[in-house]
Amino acid sequence: MTPNEYKEAKRLMGIGCIALILMLLTILLHGCAPIKYVPVETLKVEYRTRDSIRHDSIYKHDSVYIKEKGDTVYKYIKQVENRYLFINKTDTLLQTDSVQVPYPVEKKLTKWESIKLDMGGWMFGALIVLLLYILYRRYIK
Image (cartoon, rainbow, N blue to C red; front, side, top):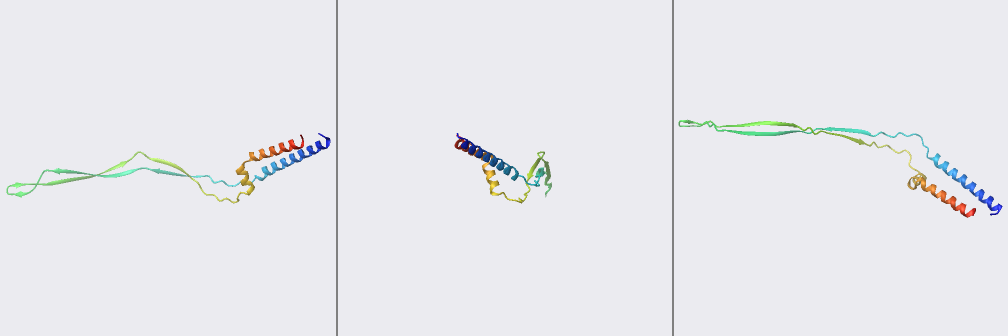
């Protein structure tokens, strides 16, 4: 490697390092934003018991008849007893549900931010390392 080629490779490596530092600073400082309110999810608590009322009729037949025919008196009584069964089930359901409150987005993502989210920061890091490796192989060796 001649001295001129060495100087050129050293200059390109310096430019590459400066470009890398500027890109990293741009990525890191571009992500800073003011603190925004993030809503806390509200809780909805529901308490249910199951009460049921069942109508239960009992028919009693009494064999007493009252009828007057000649010398016999018959007495007929039909008795109906109604009672209500109040059944309170002991199986209660206590349910806690998270309710999301919609919060408006003030600023949409830029194209660059959406690409960063889609591709990931590691992909850009790998791309930069690959470019530096290619430049190193091409200009230094």
